[in-house]
Image 1 (cartoon, one colour):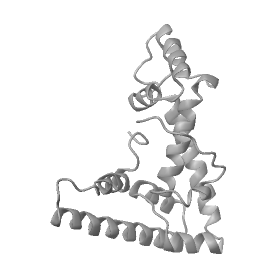
Image 2 (spheres, one colour):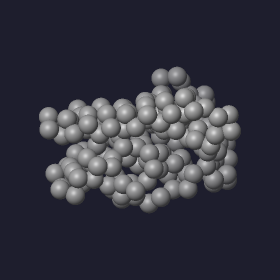
Image 3 (cartoon, helix red, strand yellow):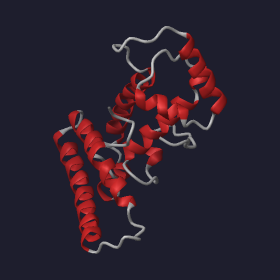
Length: 185
């Protein structure tokens, strides 16, 4: 993870203009915000991914203090859940409910059909709480994104140039398949 500036999203729908998957962008921003505000939280346990994410924080003094606090305590048992992972899971649930509630709006439904990007993990999660009609629309969105990635990856493979600057598509394909690095174990 690298240090990232936090955007102030109130709703998942504000992410519409960002590059990448809708939920991935929203959750990545939420995760960054939680890691950067660790001084205000009582962090007791961190997973590997979030420990490294905090080490890459833009707020070095905050990260230093958290690490000092964690080092002063007894070592955590393996069974302890990462405090940031717990917050992420709760936010995913809230964001999923919020998004499903907004899908009844005509403009949101149009945007979803024409432009939205959903990775496999978040699309599957959305489908679990969706009506059959919405689940079908989510499948269509994921299939459109999958086909775009396949076309771009085939083009890169077939027209490979070692100095090509289009390698960002590999990150987009990885994000589609497994979401953003660090958001899921």
